[in-house]
Amino acid sequence: MLKVKCLTASVLSVLCISLTHANDFKVLNQISKQPTQLQTGEYKGNYYVPSTLNTITWGYLPNRDAKPVLTVPSGSVVTFDTVSHEGLLEDQGRNAEKFFQSKGVKSNEILEDAKTITQSNLKHDFHKDGPHIVTGPVAIEGAQPGDILKVEVLKVEPRVPYGVISSRHGKGALVGEFPKKAKQENASAEHPERYGNVSIFTPIEKNAKGEYEGVLKTESGKSIRFPLYPFMGIMGVAANTSEPVHSVPPAMYGGNIDINELGAGSTAYYPVQVKGALFYTGDSHFAQGDGEVALTALEASARATLKFTLLKAGKDKIPGKELKQPLAENAEFWITPGLDEDLDEAMKKSTREAIRFLNQEYGIDEATAYAYLSAATDFEVSQVVDKTKGIHAKIRKADFKEFESK
Image (cartoon, rainbow, N blue to C red; front, side, top):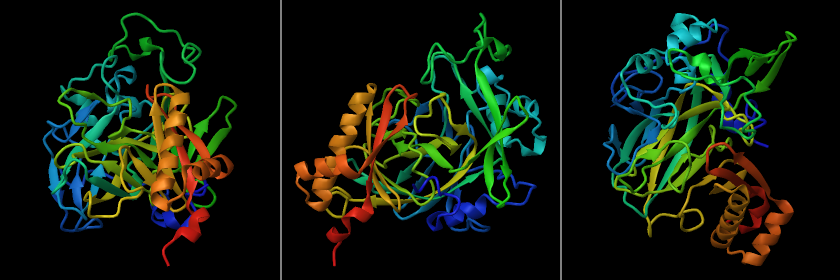
């Protein structure tokens, strides 16, 4: 599968370069303190959005009333410097510098934007609000409801050489079984140990091939080493509501969809809900297994470079002709998500959308599409930890060579 081969596949060659720095990892600090179009440097010509107290929300996604931090034309490339919530939350002390220094991280390898967020008076309720730090939104000129926002993932680069994997009481696939540490009364940022949650600091280190990989140290002194495939857990457009939109459950506008296929080289499509689309991103992962069973994956701050193209309804070619929910693709697969609190229903929704897509994209009758999916398509569990669970079909593009236009 593409994601397993991500450090060697040609489609992700840019990513491979970004993950093979020298031992002295180059921390990716903010390029600018304000959203802007960059005039010099490696990202010259790109628009840029940092994570500052003026460009983020904590625990909620932008809704239709959100004010864009930047407006760009269709065809623009935008680089986002995002900040992971892990290491910043109340059960970790809400003090990024103290938390990461306790893990042996040097002060100059702790992001200033992370320090600023935890040192601020930005309100965040650990029990009520979502955990995620969400950057944006960015408005796309001319975007209207009914249009489709095409988002090409050009790069997802680690900003720091470490991340955190957490499990928390009442969350994850094994609620009531993990964590095994007992909860105590009066837990707070001042007494984070009382939450009884588990956060495992996970550095990334070079292997013999010069590629970075995640390193989980065990009690025996031996380490588990696993490949990285950075992607953005949260990408989406604003929901058409004035109500607060919690950052945890994904929905038809995208959000916390946590599909680990959406790294560099992938493309996602979102049905625009409000004027300007109001795109946002966050919840960057260095690696995630299908299911994300413990609650979080290897969560860590990343720099995401994305290209936005507006597809106008009735004018531009839209995969599957029309979309009422997100669709994705990479070099090998079309990806149709199914989302529901019930995993069985999520499976049904992914299957129905896959049938609809094959019918509309290739003109295949529904019975044949259903048969093909049963014989040749893998359905993977995206995640089971975000209240709304996800399953996605991976429709192999190579199987449809005869349908390509001559």
